[in-house]
Image 1 (cartoon, rainbow, N blue to C red):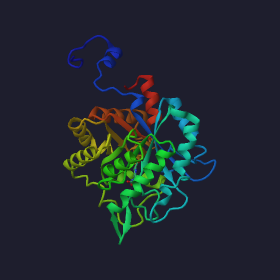
Image 2: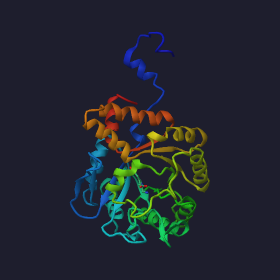
Image 3: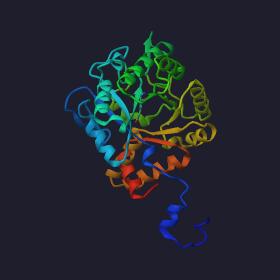
Image 4: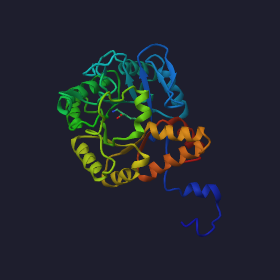
Length: 326
Ligand code: PBG
């Protein structure tokens, strides 16, 4: 139907009927930060409008999101004590573990809980892998990641999302989950994760900036697109059920290619810097926040994403329900 070149009667109803891209609240995942403590509800200065909770208050954040139509969450943990091995990550009484138990009790199976599985939030050096002789030891990191994932699952997590970009993570994690009888727990892998400045605000929110060096030895160089396809292929072969492309807006080509080449769901992670940019530009009066949020989200789905992980999940969900997009 060529609505543009010929004037066709029908207005808004027809325009919505013929939209190519459809959005649903069910495709949105909302990231939430949990830190040690009691009664904590703190606004994040680097991510205006986002909040850090303690395990006992997280239910408030979840409830607000559920009321706007979001049912899936990605949890990040900030322990009080960090060490070389990131042992807070697999502590059965760690922040994420406590939070999972509380949310399960409060919401049962009405919410879907995904947990970020990485060392960087739990290590004193802030890297995503174990450090041996001042270098990341990829293989020594793998059992630790499986241990973190299992401890989350013991506390009620529905899905593991390994984000550290260590080679072989999906294979070893799949085997570890299967060995404990969790073959029904899916793995959503951060298969194509670029070394990006757009993670800046997150590193402040999760207090996980590397203390030395950078993440360029394990995160990808943004000059390379085919490398993403190679990494996604490997992760799928190793057993990934869903693959993530991250960040989203500067990587729409990767999302588009991945969704055409592979037949597993592709999740796009619209990261902290993408959110913060819109917020900052809007607060300076340079851009309309609502419009920028809608246009960006639709573009990510138009590129081919099946799932969108976004700090705008609540607002987008309300917008979809209103019919402005979707
Ligand atoms: C940890 C991790 C990061 C993000 C998600 N998981 C940060 C990083 O790699 O530095 C970034 C999320 C965001 O910016 O919203 N491995």
